[in-house]
Image (tube, rainbow, N blue to C red; front, side):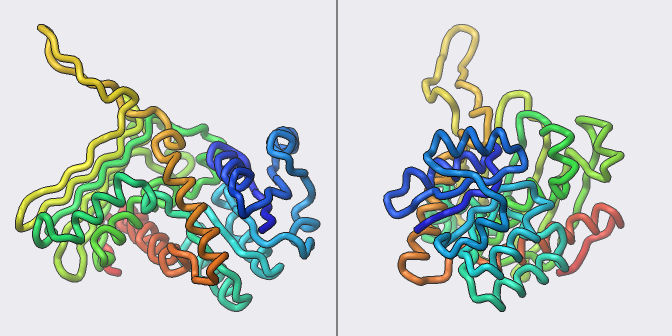
Length: 327
């Protein structure tokens, strides 16, 4: 299968390498708004660059991987769908529920495979956590706590087109909550602040937030995000149930524990998202390729993209109104 990689920033460059390395795939084109970067990645991986219209008009291209800025996803998805290409897209698919619905309607109308790249489902550590939940090791789940904090604030130029904390960062936590519990929320309540960089006020964004979700069956979820964790990329889970508790700690650079007269210490968590979830990014791409080979609908798919952005919109509305929002 011949692929085009659109966007080769920190995540897109990983996807491009996965395409080039996959035995069933050929990385034919690399596209990025930074032509110099696109040419460098293309040369490194044996691909070429070309205008997007030329690529989508090439009948030999089977699929596109979209990892450009969040604000560009919707138009690229629609163009790729109308060109008959299978689509692997970093999330969100659109910066609002309304826009996402319109985009997914085009995907449905064109009948092309669509994969919502919600990579945390594919992380081996998180997947093991879910298997143990599903086995009933802690009985009936009652509470889920998701901690997700980045080491530092991304560049302001990135944040201008990211869609904001809830659509760019916490969206993955919202999907994770739905997936782990097997049900989505019916109520969303947000408390948020700007505590890291006052510049975000002018962007209408926040850098620190806690969102509480309540499901139809009464399960409670707390998701907490921060754009600054001085000790590393903080990714932890805790599930509490009628029969006990499951916890997933951070992955660290060095798992050797030191104990001496001053106390006990471990290495700090990994510093970067691409390092922490490197295996998840590869496994999600493998799952997409396998779906294309077998003709099965890729999972996560349109319904998951739709649900995640609906929760993100509700979290934003709750922040703005100070009130819980029903879903």
